[in-house]
Image (cartoon, rainbow, N blue to C red):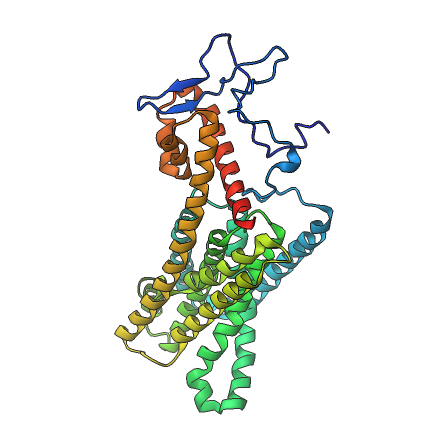
Amino acid sequence: MSREQSEPYKHVPHEPHGAAGEPPYRHTAEGAQVPSPRQGTQQADGHPSPQDRGGREERPLEQLPTHGFDERDSRSSGTWLPALVGVVVLALAFLVGLVLNVLNMSRAVFVFLPQALLALVLCVAVFAVGFWVLRRVRPVRSPSLVVSVTAAVWGALAVTGVATYANTGMSGLWGQILGFEQAGSWGAALTAPLNEELLKLVGVVIIAVVFPRAVRGPVDGFVVGALVGLGFMVVENMFHALNSISLTGGLAPTLSVVQTIGVRVFLTGLGSHWALTGIAGTAVGLVAPFGRRPGVRRVVGALLLVLLAMFLHGIVDAPLLTSGVGTLVKVVLVFVCAMAVYFTVRHTHRRRVREALSEEGQALGMRRSAATALAGRHGRRRELGHVARPERAAVRKRQKQMVETAEDRAVVSRTS
């Protein structure tokens, strides 16, 4: 294998000059210097000169950051086995969850097929919107589609299928401990935070093992966790919609389905499972990049985040503040906590990426504002608008290189 084939993620600051005397940079309409895909002068041996490299020596592969965003990570021999085991666990969990969900819903689907199809259409629409939004909330760029789908399917199949039976079993246990009257009131608040939050969190951990470059920081943990929670929320809405038909005696099955899904999306949706698992998933992103030695402070912080998610889940299911206003108070509490966690990790990630882009842009001769603009989707599109149309594909590729390197450096600066 050649050196180029063995270094798929190495960032090369400049490509060889295309023609003698061509300027290494093209000035945009706003005066920003965007590196041309043909930039750089050559020495006699055909290699870029030190000036074109920004006065820096090219770093050998072993000195480059090993973390990246693409889930197709080059793993060492010691990480292949855990990843393989994780893939097997994912496949088995998806299969078992699918079978259990089919068994749980099959009777209601056969009896009320039109209403079941309506509920399915509504839930798919909710999932599509939520899936798009949650992938977009990751700063700099969206997570991998493969990782996103895996996370959502874990919540939709693996967690819902197992949680139904786990909740039933633990509810019986609470009945023996607290008495059936108290267990009937507090059973959900004591059961769901343990079973459901831990099962959802296991999915984020497995994804971090199978796709080590997909969960490399707290912001990734939040997004992956939120996608897991979204998958769970959508299928749970389907369950409750079908159950509402039986609870109303089947008198107005269509209205029951629409009302149930409407309430669970528009009233309680903002403080639902996506927010809870986003908080818990942040804990995985807090410790995952540090391997076996995350440090006491990070472990404590991660534990507190998981406990916060469980506590909020218990508050939501507790037989307290059961009126419409009380329910809104609970929803707002969960949403505010989730947003506080999200904007904290988002701000930190964007700041580190911008610092890395500023350093990279300085080495390439770009204005600082033009370099840091690449940290946002709109900024990258704006900078592309300053480039001649025939060269946009090459410049877009250069932008991707710079962003990948910047996010690598952001991880390294945090782990150092």
